[in-house]
Length: 72
Picture 1: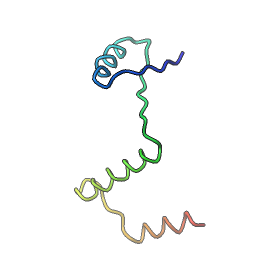
Picture 2: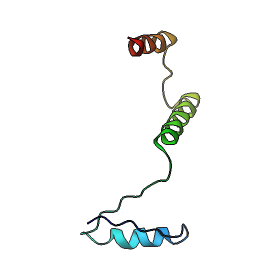
Picture 3: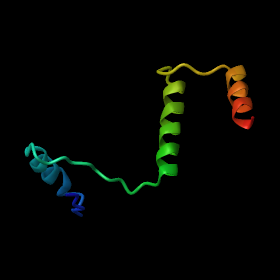
Picture 4: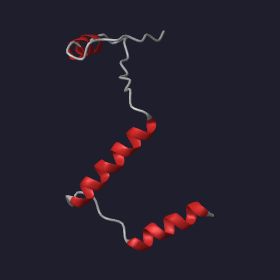
């Protein structure tokens, strides 16, 4: 059975902690972000990591190769 429960943000951590203690309950948090916003957030995080040196930056040639593949 799936249930949707709306809880105030201030009470959510308590309820999540309580529900996770039951081994017969699976908790999935639903975000209200659209897939486009989630993708944008991931892209921004990836760009910040590249600037901070945590991720390698792709070569310009690789970007053009990827673009050419998607246009075919």
